[in-house]
Image 1 (cartoon, rainbow, N blue to C red):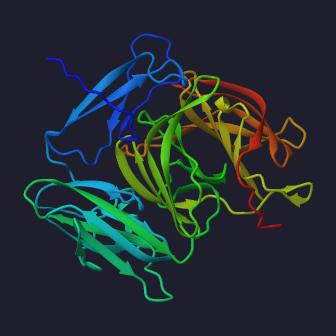
Image 2 (image 1 turned 90 degrees about the vertical axis):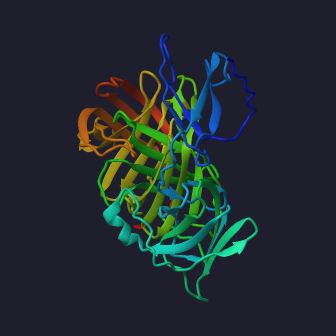
Image 3 (image 1 turned 135 degrees about the vertical axis):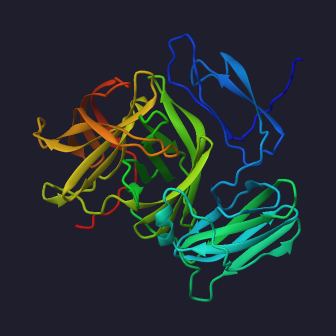
Length: 446
């Protein structure tokens, strides 16, 4: 029998699929992920994937339907709470969820958590961030020596905790431990509100995992009227890829930023962004960020540290800030995370390969320059593992050169010539100007 479903426009981003920026015809295989925490057992969900000939079209090449039916019990999985919004959690019958948490900065003074649902109880427990190191990248189970319990409210229960006057709650991972007291699995809706005495300030630039070296990280910046991040990581084949968050205006007094995460492709004229998840960046202390992510149906979080300081190179004997995010006026050509401090310089160049898929390389070994006042560097092409994949060895290969020449404080000439290794095999040859796209911080050696 035929099935007919009329799907209305929706802001739901739980169904994720994406492809190359260009396709030369023939069979096309697309990955499909469905991150829908409120999906119940034996409940059928229906979605649609549209195929378009260009970013200007919606689905002119057709629509493919997708249906998902879960026939087994839900597994209790690690879930970071994003405050200020509803977080759906499915818990099997007669089960305690001990991996639902929110990470609080050192300036947090009050936490309120509302849990909506029936036949349940909820408690709050705590771990210092240092206690998470042994479990990285996973989170340990919540301690069962609870800090406080919950009180009944209309439709559910509430957890409230506040610091004494002049004190803070303490930076760390606060677990919301929920007991489903019913025999059947249930959906619970969790909403958290955090109050702080002040926002935690942190440097903008490149950040990476604190407890392991995996050659991936984020460029955390201010530009275009808000905060944004570029995530340099690897895809499921171990090839370098990047994701970009949307730009979100800062919230006064808050150390927490969350945004939609996009995968970018190009059609050689402009970029096209596909939602693939969400990120949350919490400045928990100076020099420390907790980076929580939801990507391709997977969830995780990890403590990050800054990879730079606020010193600046001397240009003409004067400290001049060059660290930041730089872009080509031709947006389809990608951009650069530029790290330039008093005694070191490195570039992460993101670009699009022969199928216009998102890629990146690193340049940081200095070579003899060919441009006046230029800096020439080796270009390194990396292979690794995706953030939710099993760890595997990281490798890198020299694939070409990149040279820069500063023109003024907001413009740089980039001359790049490299050939990415197999299976990417993309040749990139550019001689172009790039411009600063981010806020210019002060130099500490000024």
